[in-house]
Amino acid sequence: MSGMMRDKTDRKFEVIEADHYGMCFGVKAAIAKALQIADRSPVTVLGELAHNGTVKQSMSKLGAVHGNITDLTASTKHVIITAHGAADKDRKRWAERGYRVLDTTCPLVHKAHDALRNLIVAGYTPVVIRKAGHVEVRGLTGDFPDTKVILTLDDVAALNIDSNKIGIISQTTQQLTHVVGIVKALEIRFPKADIKFTDTVCRPTKDRQVALLKLCVKVEIVIVVGGSNSNNTAQLAEKCRKLGCIAYHVQSAEEIQQSWFTGVHKVGLTAGTSTPDSDIAGVKKHLLELSRINAESNRS
Image 1: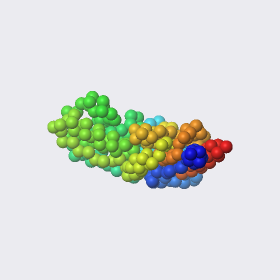
Image 2: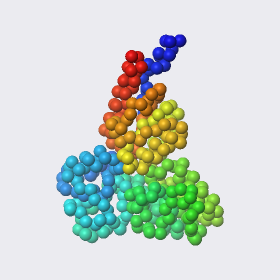
Image 3: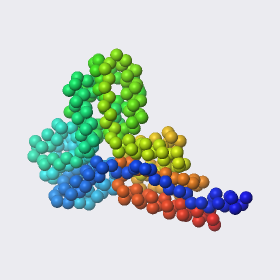
Image 4: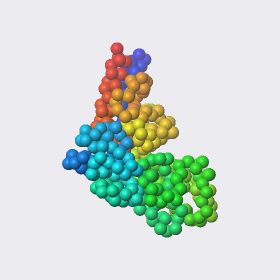
């Protein structure tokens, strides 16, 4: 009996990685392009290339300045539109002021812009399912001020639309299950309307959501790595909790506490689409070290 108990307590906790996680191709391409530009000449990044402190520090080390897309003034000749995109009117205004506008918008965000524009051209009243104030959504709705923006069932209940044609898209990093639920609620709220939904949740986001479902079945705790202001990282952590896993959203290994793993045998690891590989590697290394320490402590 004592041998069985020792086997149970002495084992290291296992670290299991999600099948898909971390920085998506759109953000990686944007960062690579921005770093290349910043290495050649002074630039102003109009916002954040990714909602991650490590990325911002990398740009700052090259002398890049961070500004706001609505300011219309910068201390450098070159300005960079981030992967989150921008309204066409903002690109035009910067160009008219004599700045060279360099665009790193993710191709899938461009597709969301096209989808919204196509719905409006077809006569639909546009609705965007989004997180309030998110930079991507400001870009999506910037050229179309009559767009309705919603996120919750309460927003649906309060929505007033006179048109009998409603066109819906979403922020690219929304949870697909949430988006589908909101679309169904709109169909109930406006039963006589012609409702057209164009799915603009991006493939990397979907892949990470499916991978998270599989991961949560296998583990007791999930460590979710990403910037504190990263919307998709926060959503991953919240989804873990809804699936019954304890989840901790951390930016770096320094935030991890050893006490989280007391009596835990399997720990999941995932990360948001704006999280650099270096941040994930640092957290994984620290988790493996804590696992070793836990096993040695239990044997002593």
